[in-house]
Length: 95
Image (spheres, rainbow, N blue to C red):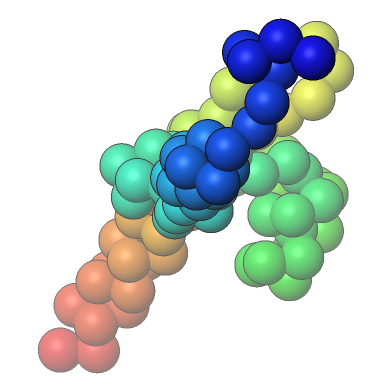
């Protein structure tokens, strides 16, 4: 063996520190400013609506979307804003 091939206790401790630092960055929560995208099935389950109702929301512009190929994607933030807007309209009608 040559001296460069021998691992010391300090080498292992340094490796451990680097590994834990890497694992911490991997396991840390993602920033909140990243948009979460949902597919049709997720939105239908979340809102308890049919495929036709979801299509109407798209066609009327009530719910913004992106389409890649044959798959529709919706931002979670857009869904929350749509729900908040309809809640505000309901409150105005009651007054």
